[in-house]
Length: 333
Image (cartoon, rainbow, N blue to C red; front, side, top):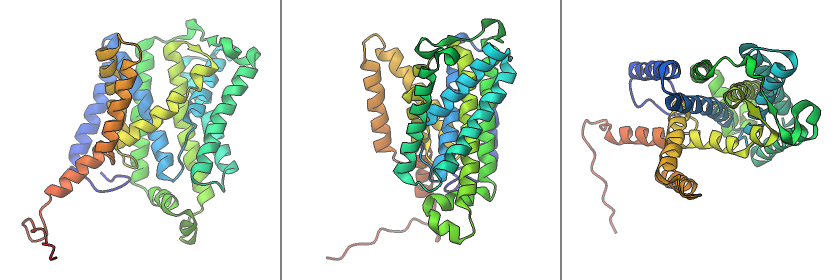
């Protein structure tokens, strides 16, 4: 299996076994797991979708600070289509996905000449602007009072979790397909030097619009599923900054610019949150303090993420070209 960055640390067939096993475990946990297991599976699945989305954009040199905007937009699109137009659970996810793709493509076209921090600020402004719009349209969105999803349309928590698990599997599959295509080389060239990539025949704007449409659709789809889990939505919940932060934490912990990174990071992020909550949840603020401290330690110890550390260990254990470990050269004063 080729990765978005770097070499394999295990043979391809082992990756296939691990990937298929993890996919089957997610679906089985969604169908037959306890409510607690189902809740953890749902959170991992939705986090995995938005972290894959963020990682794909970052792989093209587009650092997003506004993924909560796509997430909230998908949530409102699904909720309004159900309450106003009578859509079902499945059909409500279609407009949620489409509107995320359209906003992503539009934002890419508008910010075509922006790079780095300037692009990141624009994504943050987009998210905050959508939150303000949701507050200023109480007749449509319920404003600050929020809105409740039509309970008669709810398919049940197990079905919502199953669809979330399938969505996470599809997101990883899309990322894998991109890593096997020529598309990844154009995105990597844009990330390294967009001006130089143009000299190689890459059209940055076209690729930027395509990748942001894909990532916006992915994040909005996750938001559209998430609203069915809680059944309530308001601007603060829909466009919460924590969503954007989590979408960044997972790839960074797992290994940014890599294929397994978002999956590893999503599991690790949810697991750390659960452990700190169960350990110090009875003390106000203590669990969050411990959680933040653990994240800092992990980032300092593993700057390339968990997957990057595993890859580094394998390279250290790899024998030299002469079949034996080479002695370290001495420094002559």
